[in-house]
Image (cartoon, rainbow, N blue to C red; front, side, top):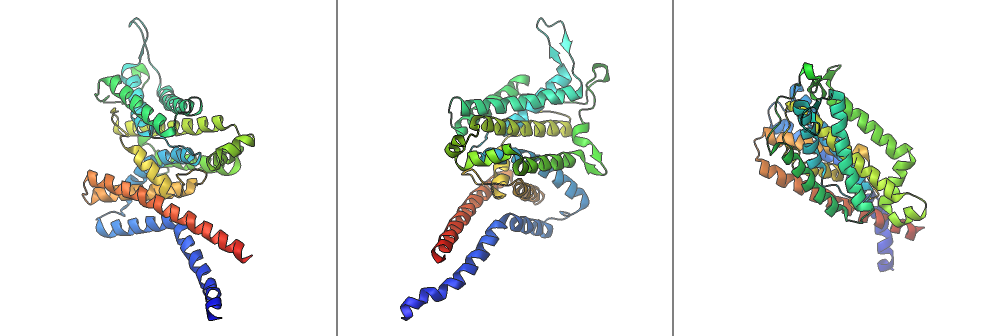
Length: 356
């Protein structure tokens, strides 16, 4: 009789343990944020100073822009490796238009655009690259990894060709050509807060609203959860995928413009490996690489973890090579923890059904 009753005696204790573990796993991003912040606050001088907080906020914003776009791509069941190259290409497009304008065929006339038009054109280039990604994936059935890997090289090569690998410097513009004002995008502050932060707040709010309040947001989750079932239920799968890749390309283009504006110069290799940070932030924030699950709020917290980790390592003088290794380990750890959470949730569901 004791052998029969032993499992029943242990069952009530097992459920609270599983519930507590699941709660910790779900809160892993906030726990990681607290740990890295506390560690660097103790290890790096002036880490929590006001000036450094502003710098970290700007860096986090750039990573968060990319991560928001990456989140929707991953939730839909895809991946976008081209975002780093789009960052470099959009900055080079802006730099070329500011310094050289748009020469017309024949070489006798040059069209000069104002800053708003230049920003719009560079953003359109990023969205266009995203559209190419979506077209390759939806129309030609190319795997997302291969399609975006290809456009990664194409976009980077195009950026290099625009200047033969050189930098476009001094992007202040000229009043006579109507190209002044570009540095304001990355250097302006409103109410003492950098414009970049306000843009992040606006984009985050818009992305959260998209996922929670619109049919398109629900369709993104449906496509990532079960593409065939979503298609049978009437979801326009191809349109959804086109949107997420175009949105991701637009986010990447915005980052390229902000960086070029802050530096007042554009370089074709800007954004190299940025896709690693974006994927790390999204996955660390709870986005499942299998698709169908993820939240923008978690992604933003993940972006803070990656941003604080990167800046803290720089302040401590850690080699850039080791920083790359650490970020890779963060991605692996986040994926492993996500798998543990999924298995635990499945086990708890089975236990609940068995007890019912």
